[in-house]
Image (cartoon, rainbow, N blue to C red):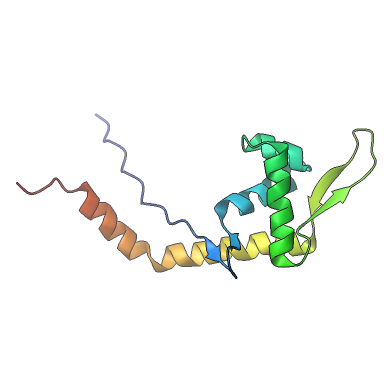
Length: 124
């Protein structure tokens, strides 16, 4: 007889609010990771079920927010151009993921307590 799988720990989602309405969060970082993996904005958007226009708008927003290009277009080749992360873009992803890991580690005990509290049946 197998034991039921343990419920996973609640997940922490990190969104970094910058000036005004400017934000960097899990969606933009995932888009950058998909651009790195797929080599184009359109393919990254498709991987996320996102339109090319939405993906392009987010890349444009990231570049504007950061005041450094995170994504650079590539020209040429038999299949046309593509896109790559700039060194700044790669560093942005790395830094965000480190912040995310550090934050999750810092609140692990509280997430475990929350999981326990949520899993308790209500008192009658």
